Length: 463
Image (cartoon, rainbow, N blue to C red):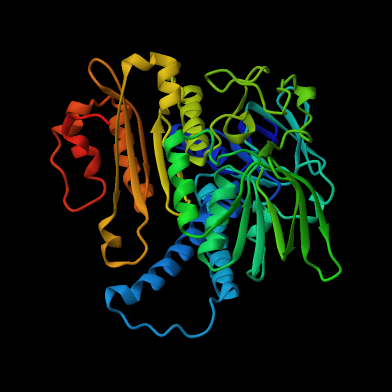
């Protein structure tokens, strides 16, 4: 057997690739496994995604708490300004430590780590740094990257990747986009005191989420003083002589507009898979019109014994999805679990907006389309979290249950408000298990919490 032959050759050391490789090593230690990575281990999530983003979300939340402290009786003298550089140094060190842990875990599992760009040269063979490697099974898990629109001046702007490279906190910033990345970054900046503006092409943000969640978040952002320009299409970005940026766009009902004086402009208008340089055609691997690798329900590509998981497939672009899909695949390939696969229904999702959102299952529109409006019963509640009973600001918590008649099985659970990110995981288990409203009602509440509203909501009365 050639030294460059592996039973399992994984391209991409992100969450999906590493999880699948390590699970394969655990299930069958005799396997010869290699992981190829062109950048740092951990992928988007660890390096420029979930992990540093959550640090920044926490930072913004700390600032909110400091503003509330006096209303809880604390006399806190805030000396000086927020030290962005100090936080960045600690955050980057934390990410670097995680990179090291990934490398250590691969070594501990006897998985070969190959640094460099991989490109297919044939069926299940790839070239890296002039060396050719062959896999009995090959997994593609290279992830994706932020996209920029095709407008003049877009190349002058940043994306979410560059956000984590900023050495200083801008005093004025423009964020363009309406998805969760745009909403999260705009919220972080606003809550750190930046004069930030969010530009959205349509009349709403987070349009793939339940309409009531989107509307309530928009209301909360407005109440918090966050500037959002809706129905605005970007036309160009220019850099002025003083180094600031000017945005030009078209606003529905108003015509052309200009927004000036931004130190930073950040686009968060979508992502694309990193497939264009992989030489997939040499291996007979088909992609769709956007470059996403086409896979079946078992993560099989169009090439025999070549698989793909994660963002590169263009479906459910979430780190835990890539991890789960990769582990299920390893169980199927190396543990004789032929029918094992990831169920892509009822995937819980959190948006680290201000306030945060948690959602699992169907939106109301999706439930009505699937079951019929007459077969759906909706419960909802809106209230002020007890934390804000002592504060001047009064952000609301909004909760919604979508049930299918006649047994009122819960097919959608949605929450916006303080603590939504932490309470969702447990309720997701219940939704996946097929829980009914009656079972929620029969569960004793934990008082006083926001989460208890899900098991006491309307006491059996729908809104």
